[in-house]
Length: 236
Image (cartoon, rainbow, N blue to C red; front, side, top):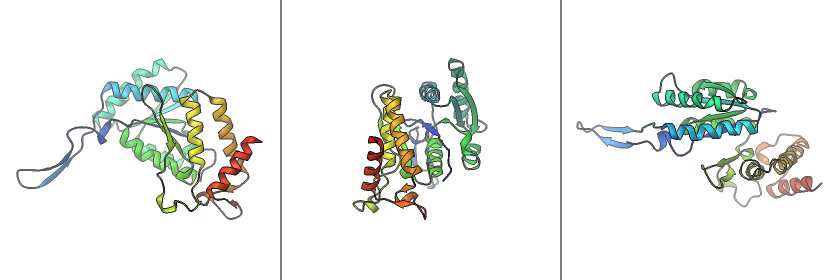
């Protein structure tokens, strides 16, 4: 676990190589199978996620790093062109660019340099999981899926963990922090979000831990006990 890291990864979710056409496994005239996936982004798609990236950075520390592979991919060159074209609309946000391979290395080497990262679907999928482990557990990471209009879906980055279902072992903090994210980014209630986040920090500062983030000398709690401890902290 790395202390003092606060990174927001803004990942485009509805385009890119996961949805581009053509896609599939085809059989050639020689009988050999060939698999194809198409990385595809339009200016409209890039502009949409770029604006969310800039606006998110504005609500944080004012630093936005756009991650692409513009030295190799034409799609990434268009991505970078559009990010740079929108940057003058956000003069209060410091914009930088990294190639995805360097960004992955920098997340491991010096993660505190990052504030907000904006990137495409494939790169965001990989980098967000790498960033999640900087906290020591994916049980600590909130996330949101946001559309252009209307409410978003706020949820932990982890799945349902069926292997520990009903055992009172799960870490509830990612779910709680997802509620804080909803308050901050979905409902424009930053003070309420601050209170929840400060409560989580206070609990962790007392060395209260669920099993996924436990170390010797700390107080080991189950899922229910962690929730009750956090609630008591917030009420006090």
